[in-house]
Length: 213
View 1: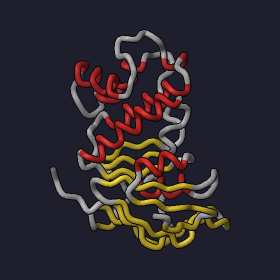
View 2: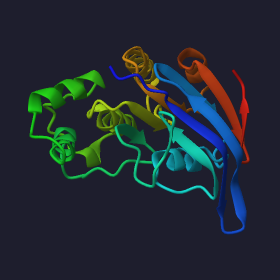
View 3: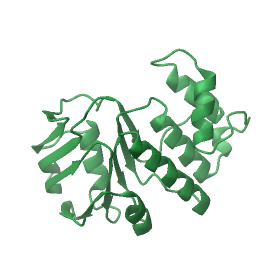
């Protein structure tokens, strides 16, 4: 496994018009660690995550990936959950993953079946995604995020819509991925998620980040 320096954000500022949404944000997320950010809706977490992923640019400050200043392109080798993923509602979960996987790979149904089973979904189900519960859609989003075996996982509220069993199963999955050496950054509203999973914890309020642990 390649040794990675992880993610480092240095004095990041971001404006939308005259409204400042990130105020001098600095943070780190290392390899084989889970870094958590806690904060209310509107605190700036999603904006920070989008900047790290290359989905929007900063007005000032730097984002370093493995020690190098990030370029304008999307973060390579990353599994991302930001806001609600767009799935094809008239297709099954397996079909959705197959279409996405074929963009960069040949069809590998047995591999994708294993990914779906890993997140607790039945790859043989004929149910269309449009008929999925919120928790099932979230499991499918996690499957989509991990199916390319990415080095980085950027997960904005990955437990959204999951029942307690689902939360516990996905916590176990993320801890496995941590042991595999992934760089994992997640946001959660649940303090217990953060307590159980995270090696490093930041709090975010009104676009400002503070170290909590």
